[in-house]
Every structure is written in C-alpha cells, then in structure tokens.
Length: 108
Image 1 (cartoon, rainbow, N blue to C red):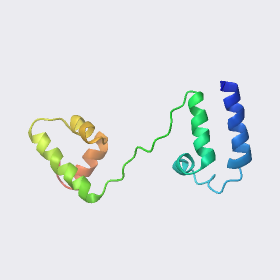
Image 2: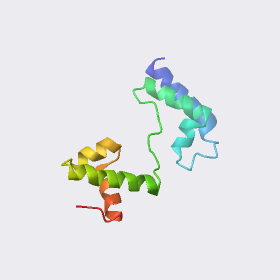
Image 3: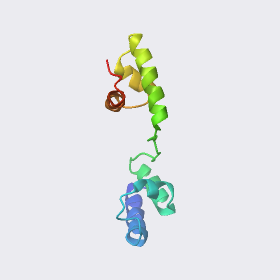
Image 4: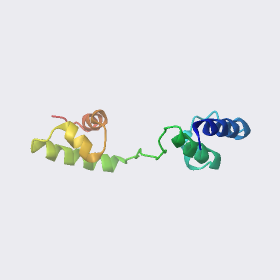
C-alpha cells in the first residue's frame, strides 16, 4: 500500500466510522486500538506511514507491589546501585520510583 492509498483509507475510515462513534470524544485511544476493529485497522495503516504498532505498555501496580519494589530498591541502594539503574531494572521511571520511596519514607 502506498502512502497516498494509506491516507485515503484513513480518511474514509474516520469519515465513515469515527465521526459517528460514541467514543470519539472520550480520548480513550486504548479502547480504539485494542477493542474497535476500525481503530485496529487505522493503527495497522499508520505503520505504513511510519508509525509504530500500539502496544499497551503501562502497568498498574498495586500498593503491595510498590512496597516490594521499594524494599528491593533500598537493598540495591545499600549495595551501591544508583536510582536510575534500579528504575531501569524494575522498568519504572526514576521520578516515579523516587515518588513512591518518598511516599513510604524510604528515601536516603
């Protein structure tokens, strides 16, 4: 599919479906890309134009999981590991890790 054909198909799909969709104003793109057949197709076409395939990457962790991560973080910190390295190990952002440590009064 050429980029021109991809753009034409995107316009046709959005005109015929997305404008009448109940979820168009919700800004819940996760719904569109995971549950809506038209949204999945739009995502596939976007790859032709140089985009990336949407994959849900965010993980909602529970308080208990965060407590375990924070305890492990403190152990690793005692062994000389830096917060940035620890954050990468647990696949979390440095800022969010520090925020969770502060919340539990576990900062050094």
